[in-house]
Length: 345
Image 1 (spheres, helix red, strand yellow):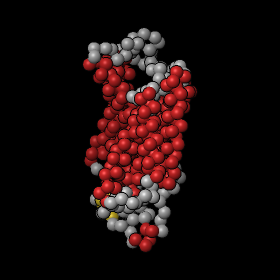
Image 2: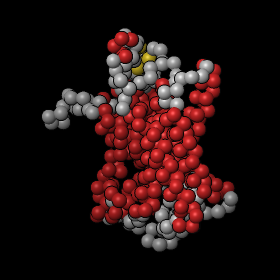
Image 3: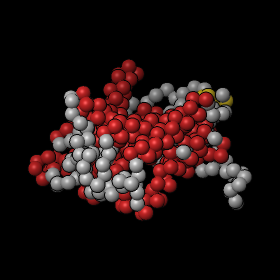
Image 4: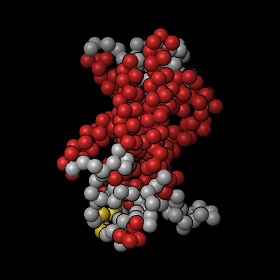
């Protein structure tokens, strides 16, 4: 581990807060309010039909439940906006308010992100129409708006959390920071577990056959390549040196640093989508089975004939893939993150 100390205070004061910290809270308030009004209109009997494969545009929070979630998010975001410059209470009262507000804001943010989980299918269906996944334009826009509101609220909560804690208001780090000087062993385990999840999904498909699967299509070749690379190359790039420095066999770029965002952002996006979408699906499968019902009553009919056992292997494999890559991405983030320009940590 490498220990970093803070920079001199006079130099730190010259560094301004990131621009996103100033506009995410009001933006979250506006988007949550407008999206909530749309959900109210739909809940009053004007909801379009066929918004997703399951009928509704959102999951977890639907109908008036979605309206309530938007109202909580809008109130939390508005409160974060008004409290941005307010420091008028005692330390104890500020701490109590801070904790309660952050709990509500983070919970609403997570609820909105989780409710938009079907957006993963929208992205796949739009980018690879040859897979046979139907694209729902209105439902996709609704889920995109829900996800945007949730992400903005999460960023606003993060900004407030950093400003109101004993540490750097820019990066949120407190005291001495121990930065990783090498990839920890647990990150290697996570990356290889992630790859095992991807390979488990492929093995499950092999067992039922590729013939009747929508993946058996000439137009889906690019998706299949990206699928394999996202489950093998990307997790390995998070823990091996060639994910941080271009290897010697890469022309022109050999020896140069790999852009951090080129590896971290796809890993964070893919892992987040897999964990949320297939985590909710797995919970629904378990709930249906506990009630004695088949989670996939239509899986044995139509052009795709897949047994229920296939889903009990494939869905957990997807989830393990996402969780493993998320853990490895955390290690990559800690290993490659630059020092704060304000505090030097």
